[in-house]
Length: 267
Image (cartoon, rainbow, N blue to C red):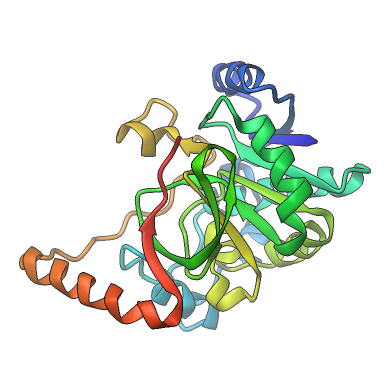
């Protein structure tokens, strides 16, 4: 299986760090030179910048777990989009039926290779792609699941889930994703990982075999050097007990719909 790793030319140490992990897990990485958003021209940036009343920007506001306001994509966000386009193109140009796409700040579980082989052979045909990373946000997944070795479960992803740091994708989906991302006016993960709005059938592995460094430790020396999202003020929730109760009641309401809200963990 081809494994593509997005990495900036200047980030030699990060490349060595992730390649050492991949080797320990039995994976061989093909490096994809990342696109540095700050070097892009005004015309390229303008293609991905939505007005605040654009439908995509409104959807972005609705999907955001942190009340992220509609905004023009930052150069870093555009760079991230185009980096994933570059990785997907390299995959499509190969003769492989499926591939792993990762970013260079992920921790990799030691059983990743066997797990990926099992997923590709037995489960990927039922999905457009499968998300393989843990994140701190809670997301809706199906109550029904496919059981995998190592006490892992493969759910249907039913709502937005943060991040595009690790996913398994098949060729037909990669061709479609290239077209979507090249004209996207939303950040990469919002464009790809929102099944409620993009119509894709996405699998979510739990526990996940990949996690970004900042989510694993809370702080990181591997913060994205392609570019950051613009910062936005988060709402303060003073009545935390009321919020917790509301969340529990909301989860109960979802039971008849075959949904559950969980946090994807790493192992």
